[in-house]
Length: 206
Image (tube, rainbow, N blue to C red):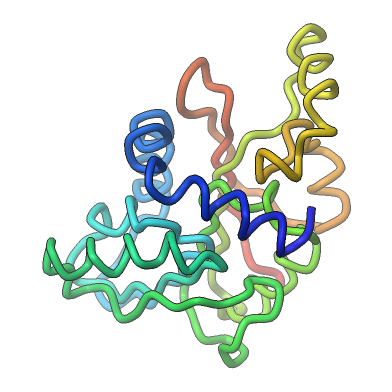
């Protein structure tokens, strides 16, 4: 996985993303907003905001900033913010999540929906999420991880060489990810079709 491959993949997806992936991932988006337990005035960063499908789900009394590497996906997000008059959205910005342009301790909560298996370096992504999140804040991740089912696990491994074309890693391993990032998971739940995806709520250790 590299930035150019990701941009190419999501340039293809931009026009069809909402129709194809919107319904599949919607339960996970709703679940992560529920787990966020938003409080009035919370300053929230969503990493990999894409076309902004999750933005209308946030309560009106928080402030949300979204970033993404795909200009084409962000065009859709800008349109959504304007058409739906999402006044709680502070900005949607084109930015590399592994090199964020925000200061330390900028956000109360940092969210990554369907992103960690997409970026070139998931460990660096988590480091940046932790850096921009306040020390007493929380990090939330929704993602597909390698199945424990032997048949599905084999299928995911076979699809792995297509990662660049697909724009994500189908065989992304949860235990390895947690070990390398040292995330402190305080809650985990299964979401979406057949519970094939996970939502992780993590305490930011700083």
